[in-house]
Image (cartoon, rainbow, N blue to C red):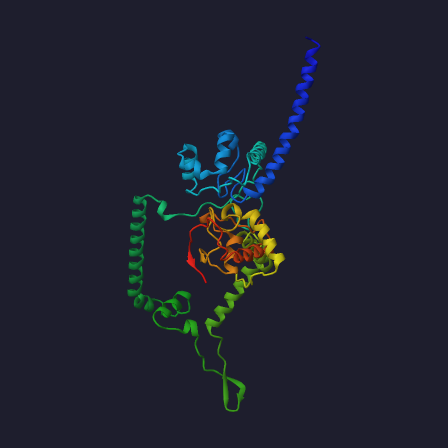
Length: 400
């Protein structure tokens, strides 16, 4: 017996070594099948159009998965509780039927691939930090939340309104009292000792004397300043002009301190860089891929090689939802004259590139290049009037 045990252990070890590569090979085959048929609507780690498939082999047995992939409609109509639950949860969108397209072995390989991907640790995502002011240094605390009037209790709101009303009444009373007292103050500050004070000039201005702003003409002729019968008077500059000059001096000093000494403000180059960063946040693609409102003037491609390339990309990426012949499955029929978002090559190009997330259409700009998208769009247009069997009912508006 002791001699048999080592042979048994060696046999078990060899069996385990032999099984491991086979399982890995199944996952490799499964990835190819998954990318060609399932990747348009599913991912392992995250939800796309359909549910995330992580650990699906633990939630459902292999027989049920095979039946659902082959013909989900048949399983739903049979009243299968799990199938109906998935159908209801994901907007009553039926999964494409792969009966006759995928064999049991293909589906088993896909399950092996999903199992292998599920066992991989999820990629750590960088922690999102609240945006901070460009002027804040490293390590500065984020700005506090702005004040919200609606967040105050009703009693506090009423109290604030009453206090504000009382302050307005008091301020209004003081203004009326001051206006009524202007004549008395005018006589008081008309004394020779107070006539040239700032308060006396302010009160005179309120009473209609504008000499504080316009200045007082002395009407004193300057000697030897008479030319062609034009006389020059020796008057000071108007006070308003001098006040504006003083204001520009103060502004210039403040500008110098703010931007060049304390550097608490951004100069033109820094402002430009900040605006570029903001634009990058609003348009993560960097602007090279345009946006959904971009103006395009493409013409449908007619070269056989381009249309063949578009067909290959269509079958690989679009057939899962639109059918191998564009007859429509989960997505609409692409061979008739009815369109949901426009039927010219530019409208189709934008739908393929940017998607329609509200209706489950995936954006393909991250996977297909602009040239490939134009090829697919042109191929879709070439399907018009092909009348494939089992075509889906028309959707949208008729486009000639």
